[in-house]
Amino acid sequence: MGTVVLHAGMGKAGSTSIQAWLTENAARLRGLETCVFVLREESDERTGTRLRLTPYTSGSADSNVIRMALAPDGGEEEACLDSFFEQLDAAATRSRVVVFSAEGMSEFFFRALPAFLSRLDELGRRHRVRVAYYVRPQHTALEAAWRQWGFRSGFPPSQFFEPFSWAYDYFETYLSICRHAPTVSFEPRPFRADLLDGGDPAVDFARRFLDGVEAYALPESRIWSNVGLSLEVVNAIRHAPPDLLFSSPHDNEKLGGIKTLLSSLDAPETEQTAKSRLVLQAHCHAVFEPGNSRLIDALGWRTDTFVPPVEGDPHEGQLRALDDLWEPRASPIELQALYRALDGALSPLLDKRPAPGPQHQSSSHPEARELAAATKDLARAQAELARLRKSRTWRLNRLLARVRAGLKRRRPPKGDPIEAVSKRLENAARRLEQLEISPGEELPHGGRADRKRLPSSSDG
Image (tube, rainbow, N blue to C red; front, side, top):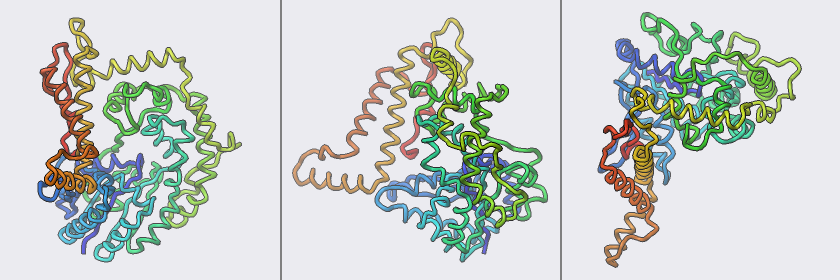
């Protein structure tokens, strides 16, 4: 019998820091019979796309592919879950300690997904199963979610927070897991520097969940990864035109560049920002602190409160006050100037090239814009094609089309969902051919086609 350690987030609670430490120490951990595993998608001509649990060797240690793969069409999530837990069971049989990290897996716990928890409980009957579930005080967690995703959602803060704030009821999640998976040791850890062992998430994770690691594999210095942009910055860029700086809450193509350009800005907290944080803290204390107090008692955290009270309770903790407080105060012309300046400054960072000299035209040349649009269409079409090929509905539709075509010698019906995607692929490829340039080659005016924007069909 082995030990399975599942690191399941939550988001913006040190996950990237823990995963960075795991990748740096994976080889040394194997010497302690502690194996870090990752889940990868593999394509097979006979069986289609499947998930394979393999020991970590390179790349990212985050296995969030599990979150995307366990929600396919046609009820295939049951087969995916069976395969995942069978492989996890086999790995725990061979290794003393198995470590699997996926920040997005936290959703399976706060949603109390029955299909997942029942299999997890069954695994707990054969092995020791521990779940590392890092949580941060709700007022800082909600602000971090806004600074990472929410400001790009197009919604005001009160509307962005409302649909999923229940996910931050940590005590209710704790009770639910204890009830649905009693064989599993579900262990929420407080992501607060004064409550983490060593004041660091990676140190805390190693000491709390990896027996025998403390001898020599603890990090020598603090690791803080994926630090978000400041509240003032995200609120200043939240109304940027679509596709200029981001196209969705999870479009991170340019976010890293924005962090490089703006993360070093060190400005004092404005009165508006300070007031907004008190509003959010007052709201979270009123909504979540009763449950937090019970969780503190149950788990023995060394604190009296997780979300401290606010004197005077500004605006009575109403989230609607944030809709005004988090609006940028700059004029429309000032914001437009900021957006244009950022867009221009990001191009050389994304191309990994020095800024073009005066003899070159900018990357806004029509050929560069046409190439960017064509490659984006191609990438989206390939991603859509990959999703369709995993769909049982598509496979049945294709089979029916072939039968009809064979019997009646006619083309597949117009309702075939692959037809539109195929046309998009053909159109995008034709546009690339017309430009007579392939991704990654130099553009005639100093730009570069980014090969990273052409994912394979398995990237869906």
